[in-house]
Length: 367
Image (cartoon, rainbow, N blue to C red; front, top):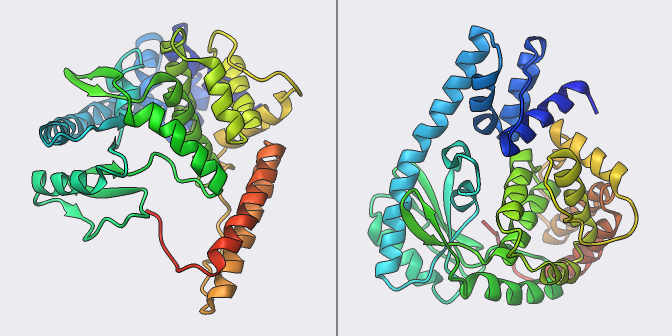
C-alpha cells in the first residue's frame, strides 16, 4: 500500500478512536483529495487542526469543509423533524435509516455529514406515507406517482431529499429476496430501537439487522458505483456501539442466507487490521482473505471499485437490449469475483436466473 494511503488510514483511525495525527505538508494535495473522495474530511480535519502544524492553505481548506458540513446539517435537521412529526401524527411507523442515524455513533455527530433523509415505512404504509409527505411539503419537487416496484418514493423539500422506502434493499435473486423480507420484518417493521438525533427521538433499525443493512448498503455500492471509506467507518462505529447487543449468531445466519460470508470477512479484516476496530468480528473461520481484502481496500482508496463506464445500451430490439444488460452484469460479477470469488459466482447465477425471468416481462425501472 502506498505510504500516503497508510498515513491517511492512520488519520482516520485516530479520528475514530483517538491518537496522534500526522500531516506531512508535502502530501497535502493527495491527502486532501483522498479525504474528499472517501467522505472522511469532516471526521478527520478537526483533529488535524488541533494537533498538526499546517500551512495556511491546508488550514483554510479544512476549516472551509468543516464549516460547510456543519451548515448543511441545519436544513437537514429541520426537515427531518418536520417529516418525522408529520408521519407520527398520521400514525405511520417510520424507521430512520443510514446517514442521520449513523451520525449518532461518531465522537462528534455533526462531523458525520449526511446528505438526505431515508425513512423506511414498509409496503403497507408506503402510499399513505408518500401522501403525508406531499401534504407536509406541498411545494416540494416530487414524483407524479409512487409505483409498487419502486424501492422508495422521493421528494425534494427546500433542497433536502427525502426518500420514503417501501423496502430497504432491492435484491435480484428471488430466494435472496424472500429471505431478506423476513429479516427486514424483524429488523425494521417491528423495531422500537430509539436514538436521539439533536434532541429528536427517532426509531432506528434493530441493532443486529442494522449491522447487516449498513454492510449490505456499502457492499451494494462496491458492486455498482463504488463504496467509500466513510461507509466502513459507519459500520465500525455501529459494531463498536452495539458490541454487547448484536447477536453474532443471528448475524451469521443472515449473511449465510444471502451468500455474504466471504464478503463480510473482507470487511471484517479491513475494520480490524486497517481501521482499528477492537474485538473479533470475522464471524467465519476459513481461508485467509488478507491479500484480497488489502487489494479491495487499495482499489477503494484509489477509486477503482466503481463500475467501468460502458456505452449505453441503445438497441431498439428488447431482446438485444436485455441480452446486452445481462452481459454487463456478468462482467460486473467477474470483476467482483477478484475480491470475493464465492459472491462473484452467486452474482452470475443470479444474473442468469433474473435475466431469463425478465426476458419476457415488461420493462420497469427501479429508482
